[in-house]
Length: 309
Image (tube, rainbow, N blue to C red; front, side):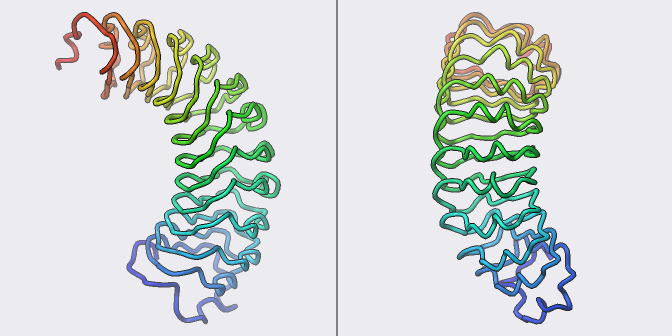
């Protein structure tokens, strides 16, 4: 029933009666306005509830505690506000929780890590959360994808992210207020595919251990305070498709190995740094390269002929 033009939940309260209590999945994405009715909580067999991209307002009702079978809850793209309601901590079987694109405020509660130990996917991006990443998240041993993008979070990146979350493959923290150097524990995230730390206040150099993250496909560190030269160990990132390092303070020459050793590279953005020297002709060896941004550096010499094609 997704993607229709409904103006509310089913008006007939009988829809939610015991005759329909065996419904296991309900998807009303892009359909409805108003508040979530308490009658929805009569659907006690629900394992998946998708109410994303609506115009839902108000609060998540306390009766959600009746939905004990829920494993996937998607409420993204609505107009919920206030702090996260503690009723969600009663949903012990949740492995997907998507609350992105709302107006939730306050600190991200510790009970997420204390009570929802089955979580594999946690999306809280595009809200108004503040404070630090809760230390209880270290208990989410099954967590594979964490997105906290576009909030007001602060603090350093905790060591336990690399020490306690062994299955993490996607970590997105873009557009917050995190600062400090990258903790060396991140080198333990052998399954990491996506790392987006852009638009924060991270500093220091890109450490040599970055080359140990050999499954990385996306590395986005733009708009931070990183400096120094790019480590040669990055040549080990054979699956890298997206490398965005613009708007930092990187120096030295653009390494030749970018063109020679990164065969999957599609996007290379190094603009607004302090790179010097020539544009390496080896970049012409990147067979898949589609985006190249080098503006606002201190580069000299000529533009390789291959970029005229």
